[in-house]
Amino acid sequence: MNAPALVFSDDQANAFDRVTELLRGAGVDLDDGLCLPPRDGRAAVMALLGKAGSGKTLLLAELWKALETAGVETISGDYEGRRRKDRRTLAVLAPTNKAASVLRMRGVPATTIHRILYTPVYDPEYERIAEWLMGNGDRPEIEGLTDAALDRAKLAYEGHKSIPAALAAAGLRGSDFITGWKRREEPLDIGFVDEASMLDDRQYEDLREIFPTLLLFGDPAQLAPVNQSGQMVFDRLAERQKLELHRIHRQEADNPILDLAHALADPDIGFEQFERMVEDRASNDDRVVWGGRVEVDLMARSPVLVWRNATRIRLINAFRAVHHAPETELLPGEPLICDGIELPLKHRKKRLDLEARGLIKGAQVIYLGPGRKPGFSRLHVMGAIEPQVSAASIVKIEKPDEQEPFIPFAARMGATFLHGAAVTIHKAQGSQWEQVQVFAPDLYAAARAGRVEAGIPLWKRLAYVAITRASDRLYWVVRNRLAKPTGPLSIDDLGGDAAPLALEGDT
Image 1 (cartoon, helix red, strand yellow):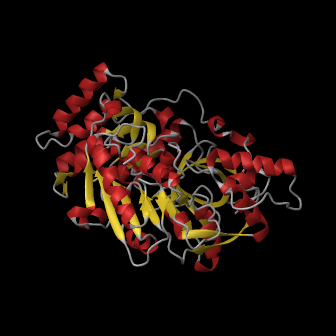
Image 2 (cartoon, helix red, strand yellow):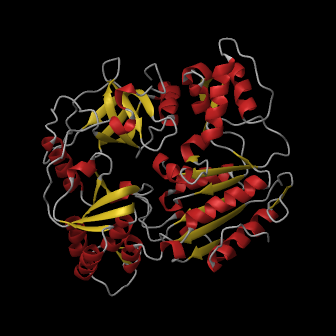
Image 3 (cartoon, rainbow, N blue to C red):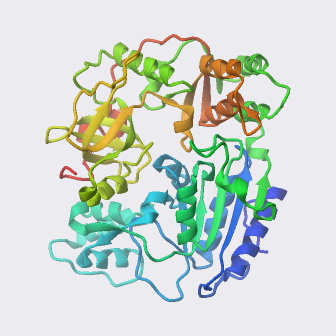
């Protein structure tokens, strides 16, 4: 095998070889850089598993590079080029925009599962631009678009391989070039799925229908999806279909956050003993902070992670109170979490349009201000390639000890949102932030409850997921207190009011 320039660990090299063998059986030879036409009737699933720091994402990125070199075409979900009989395709997927953005930061053009299940239909005139950008056609002449506009589109596409973002750079709106959305009917080829521990049975079956060759990258120590009885989709695979990676690689050997996460695997460690370990790490490494209070400044971009809904609601209301947020409206800069789309079936196209722009359940959003129509909001979707949108919004702010949420304003129908200053650890799966605050009293409550999931104490699973959401710094908050903000909420880091909206018209 022609090994990549990067030096793999032994288990990564073994995994690369196993995947190479699997792909060779599907007609893609990474050793010789050859692609044969797709073979009908051949299907294969493999799971590459490992805890945080085991190198799953690095391996995924290197496999993507090798497939690109071999001539396999990456399907991004934004636009799918014209079909050729001998074309080989790859889609790199994640359950959420935030998880996909982690891969895109590594240069891997990842998209969400939803964007692969539903594909955009392009106006034929602008489809010519897309084909040219992808290298499949000549430079077009389009009425109303100057050479300078096409040059801007070309430059934008070379930067991040997004057709809609490139067309937006040329001055076009989504409604100019996308005429509708349709559920994918034709299968693709090879699928890589990151954060596969988040998949439920229905998503898995959808992916099996689309991809004859499917690779799942997952962490078996995370929390299983709700209603999955503590089981992840790869748990049902045969042992020969699973391969486990083990930490630690040299570049991560001194990471105290990962050290703490992996310490939870010790069956003899209890909650109090683990807390002493966190406190000890905090005393000699500033990447771990023993917090006596919740830092409110961090909550606007990185939610506090909790176990109990009651804790989440109390922290959200405390966050709004210290910022003097009025009950009747939101302040620019307040974080929201998309809780789905409330639209009747007859508005299916509008639903798909909103979801395609990143407003899928669990998406983290920052409120920028009111839209031009009553009930509309201007929003920044975290992790999306084109993050700024305007959409009909239904915002629900839950109150302590009250059954019904308070709704400061709402459209009749549209995208629904909960406040995002605090979220449950279950909802945080698939996301990662530079700095994360974990509300330890909730984990203590889980430990006292004595609950067990798949043979592991629930508090340990919760702690593992919460800790591994932090890439740079972990705050272990041990008191139910809130710090005062150092300043008002701001949207300056997002471009604020001066930033152009990806959609000039309300959706």
